[in-house]
Length: 204
Image 1 (tube, rainbow, N blue to C red):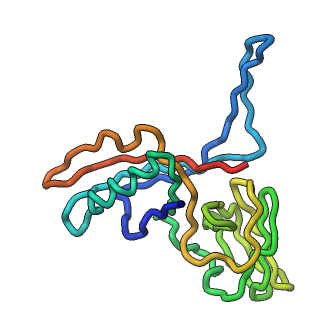
Image 2: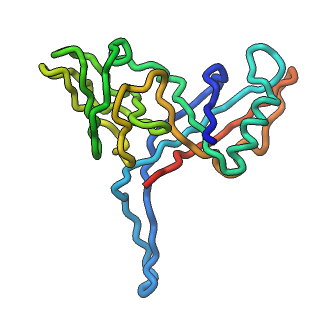
């Protein structure tokens, strides 16, 4: 089962970025190590600090521990970027917009208002399939036929889900990094500070 990080559990700080996915291979014959950037592009990484406790402005500590116990055992969790919960473009204001295809670093949308600018803005996030998050790399406008080609990063690694654009914030399927949050700090009065690191669960 895939878990979803509750939107009401806002972290104190959060950094979300695309990190180069490099692969290192050592030659059996020469012993030399070769490193290259594979075609999958980068992977999302996330680091966030939390405050858990019993007061209304903190995350309930028992609930947090229960949630984190499962990713620690290898269960993935869908995380949003709290600084970009909604797009700056107008995409979500238009009903009936569908994902009609996509490959590589481009996603195809259709049934848009014709010749409309500002559909998406550079830096907006979009989820073309559950748990897959991509950043729009340039402003997007609809063509005269109501279609748009959306430049994205990282590139698509699974086929997009054709059909209506998913509502709500984009989320990325991630795994909790080993030992993340294993040494929480106690902050008065009765609050626990914790830093968690996550990495995208890559699918090839």
